Image (cartoon, rainbow, N blue to C red):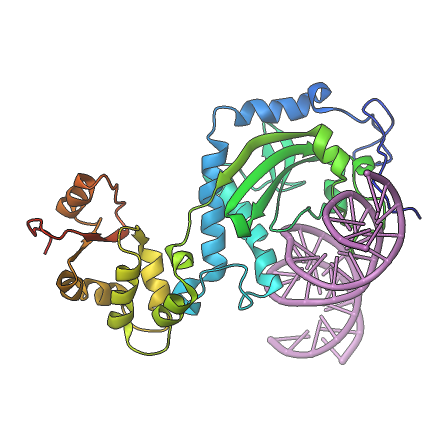
Length: 299
DNA sequence: CCGTAAAGACCGTAAGGCAT
DNA sequence: ATGCCTTACGGTCTTTACGG
């Protein structure tokens, strides 16, 4: 068996797949079902909704409040856990787009069966039941904190030719990816977990066993002054301890001694203070702002 | 001679069937 | 009920060898 770049059959040729009956390979422009799905997606903020769904799925798997983890690439995350991001993402996407869970694949969009697929690697594992059907394929690039998605009819003729994995799953051949997959949106940034901005030494201090939460939260807010800190990050730093949010409220005075004002978006006047510094604070966001020389009002 | 496309070995959870 | 096996679904990751 030669293993070079696959030469694929062109649109118009007979597909080798019989999963959906004998059929002709269809390029996106000639694929009315694919066009129907595109039309359905058009009025949606696909990139934005996917960004939220991916962030939620990753946070769910990391489970920072219990595990203290904040990086899906870390060795503390098992490959099986990384794989489970795809399972969670599917349901986050269905919820975000108000789509039903519906056979024969993951959902129906404009009445057309569609599979929701994701990878943190370089290709997808297309199961045999999805061969020749439509798939929304999302690539999550953890190292660069970004993602993008395509809509593609995964004709069996356009997949790898081997046996695939044990279950018969196959990847999408690059030519089909390049020529017959429709980008839904280009590379889109994922929210950055502020903890990833710390230097290794800072990280080890903030996430250490000792000292207690208040000292470590103080360090974190100081290191990350000016960066928005979501509630979930505070929970991660306080993983395994009790009531991290209470501890966060308790470090306001320590930070004040360093000339830092700790703001919590839960309170309108603190949101206003942040807004005065051109920062939009969500209801669950915190931030330590350098306010030397200003009148303190956020106590 | 090395980067990358392709192949396929392998992993975890859940659900269903069937024999205790 | 309980245990055991198989299938289904969600994937990662390492190995192989083509081809520039």
